[in-house]
Image (tube, rainbow, N blue to C red; front, side, top):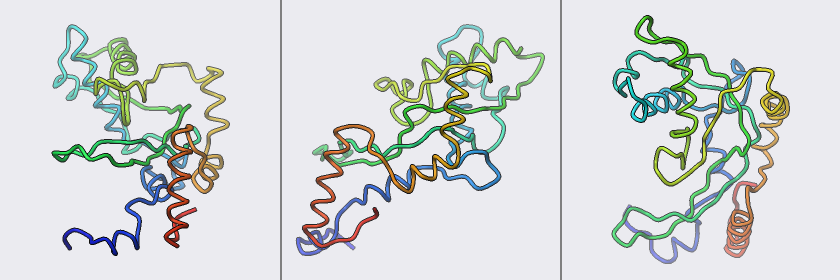
Amino acid sequence: KGKANSAEKASRLKHDPVQEFRSSMYLLDDRYPSAIGILASSFKASISNAALDLPGSTKSQIGRLVYVEGDYVPIFGAPKLFMSVVRSADMNRTPDIRTRAIIPQWACLIRISFVEPNLKATSVVNLLSAAGITQGVGDWRPQKGKGSYGQFAIVNSDDPAFRSIVESGGKEAQHIAIAHPEVYDSETENLLAWFREEADRRGLKVAA
């Protein structure tokens, strides 16, 4: 269609933050115990990449010998709306606003299969533990070198913090959080307020 002219730009907004928040999540069907999931391959990649920092194994070897079962891993925890300023990949590094879901406190159960006798359970646990610290999952994870989001630790199923997240951040709480999103921080609150004021000024309807 080519570049929009001034009249076209004024008649619409580039972003719909609430809709983008909802679209940023993998929403699961009734077969799963939670409403939100993450690709199981994210954890496999995290484990494989952790092998780069540990002696005795290679990334490609671990990728062949370790499997995280299923297509999605159900995630427990209430999502919040997170907006931040990013830089586009063009020559001028044009600033833009990115909206996505963030789960400040999250928990999950994953099932891992591995090939014996090439690997032992202790080795897999060590790799997973290292992956939680040095790799993480999701956006802005330590693997990328700048962020610290998406880190995780291995705990027993009766761990109090784990149980609290599972019990308070299940399907019902997640559906409420998706339908009526709360902002993550003050920057998000300010950006969302500006967006809504701008939408009202232009007489545009956006997701609530």
